[in-house]
Amino acid sequence: MVDDGFPGIAPVAEFDGVDRTRFEAEIQPAGEPAILRGLVKDWPLLKASRQGAGALADRLKQTAPDTPVRTFRQPRSAGTRFFYNEDFSGFTFEVETPPLGVLLDTLVSGQDAAEPDALFAGGVPVREALAPIARDNPMSLLDPAVERLTSLWIGNQTRTAPHWDLPQNLACVVSGRRRFLLFPIEQIANLYIGPLDVTLAGQPVSLVDPRHPDIDRFPRFAEAMKQARIAELGPGDALYMPSMQVHYVETLDPFGMMMNFWWRDGPEHLATPFMTLLHGLLTLRGMPARERQAWKLIFDRYLFQDDEDPMVHLPSTARGLFGDPTPDKLARIRAILGRSLNR
Image (cartoon, rainbow, N blue to C red):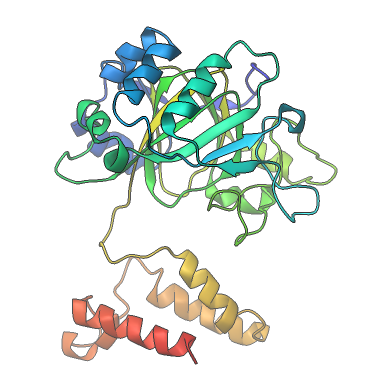
């Protein structure tokens, strides 16, 4: 694993002593990634981590040693980046589901191995499988009355391809060092995104390896790097990532663990807009350019207009499905879409 940073890349802004008031008033509204130094340094998990990987593993095994965890395993000969095989017919890794205790023992015992397999368990659900961990290690920046997806990410020296996530995210380092390389979503054309529907772990990824970029094959990636920012994190630090922030991640030590808190702002009925993108394949792709441009104007007017309600000239009783959402209207929209898709 390369242990140096990316020379010349601007660092993500850092903040110390952040509380919930400052987070909500200053950091979150800025819509930019932010390093929150020492945010979780007082967690019980950090106390265990400071005693070593074995002590931290024991703490988790006391809670749920038999919980199956979805794990990527890749021979070291294939490198440390989980990715597609050469013809995109499969992946460079195998998926296993060992018990959490077995995974932790494997990682702890393999810390001194010369060429251990690359191992990574992502998205281990904390609230479901490890409820005491969630209770004892709360996120002080978020409303405790609101349940949010909370997950552990555990592995050795591995690399995660650049990708984006829809929710906002607070990534908290419990053990080991992490390096994030972040790109604004506006750089998507310069990141050469791979298949959108056949993915490594749910999210589309960039085909470019930031550590070894093939600029002849991916020339525009050089432009993306001009807009990139870097975040170097140690145990106790956290990184706030707004929605849709593209990020590449390196785990720099033989044992690494993060706890992530995910959430979305907005009404609860919101589904992923990826469904809209798929629906567009049926309704917009292949349409004559002039017609497609006309529909782009309509989408801009009725979906993306922020400064004026496009229905303001109509009384509320005449706005139909485009008025304020109600359970009945949402049910009708789903029924209309369901009938359309099932034809």
